[in-house]
Image 1: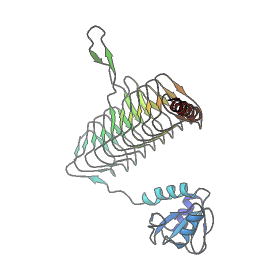
Image 2 (image 1 turned 120 degrees about the horizontal axis):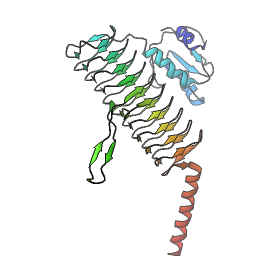
Image 3 (image 1 turned 30 degrees about the vertical axis):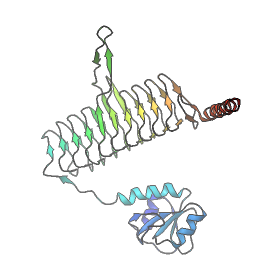
Image 4 (image 1 turned 90 degrees about the vertical axis):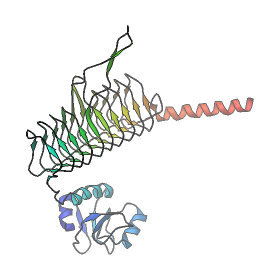
Amino acid sequence: MKLSELAGRLGLTRAGDGDPEVTGVASLVSAGKFDLVFAEGAKALNEARTSNAAAVIATESIPGKVALISTHPKLTFARSAQILLGSTAARSGTHPSAVIDPMAQVAPDVSIGAQCFVGLNVVIGSGTRIGEGCILLGESTIGSNCQLVARVTVYPGTTIGDRVTVHAGAVLGSDGFGYVRDGKTGEYVKFPQQGSLNIEDDVEIGANATIDRGALDATVIGRGTKIDNLVHVGHNVRIGSNVVIAGQTGVSGSSVIQDGVIVGGQVGIAEHVTIESGTILGAQAGVPSNKVIRGKGIVFWGTPARPIKDYLKELAILARLARGKGKRE
């Protein structure tokens, strides 16, 4: 689209001569004559001047370049990419190898790839793309303008909102890991896993992530939350809005992660834990059962997780003790 149209949609001011057409986004190094780039900092601004890009997003005008003026170029760049890369209409239609139950409700402009299965009473909203090999079991609902990339499995009782992206191999709505032990025989008897999974709008779920349905009630993933690859979310977990969870994290059953929490990679959260709004769990932090972690903007680290300043203080004390022991020996 013309840069002036993009500027209008973003509410930005355009600086420089001309109104170039832009078709995509790129880095400063690889940009071509139809690409949009961003520049933050003096070094990037210098590189932008000699870039082949059609236009630059920056905090100030750039001699010899057409620019979009933004107070947060990187954020504007990300939003521009969503507009540009989403401007081409997706192919609609069903591959001949797909199996669609006659009782499924599929909007006319949905795309369904090869080797897919869509079960009884499944609902798929307008503009959604179901990639190759996806399995949508009966009584599940997929909203509008979603993308299930490939080999995604959706169990019954799963509801997915609008504009949700699910990457390859994810499993949504499987049974939770819940058992009751018979003290006499040592046998583990499976607790009912008949609840639901509710994924709200604008969520993104990474490759090979697994999210369990509730045992008797619901597992909930809040609006705008982003879940990385290889994350496991247990039954009855409630995750708030705009939460970010990095790869290889595990969240045990009945835990609550409130709005705006950031969870680093390989974090372990035990059952019945509450992580309050705005808290940050650093990589490989561990939170024991029934704990409440609170502190907006505070980074927690270690196992058991505690504020990073306390954790680093403990490490310093241990290092001094180790040095003292070494000298005595």
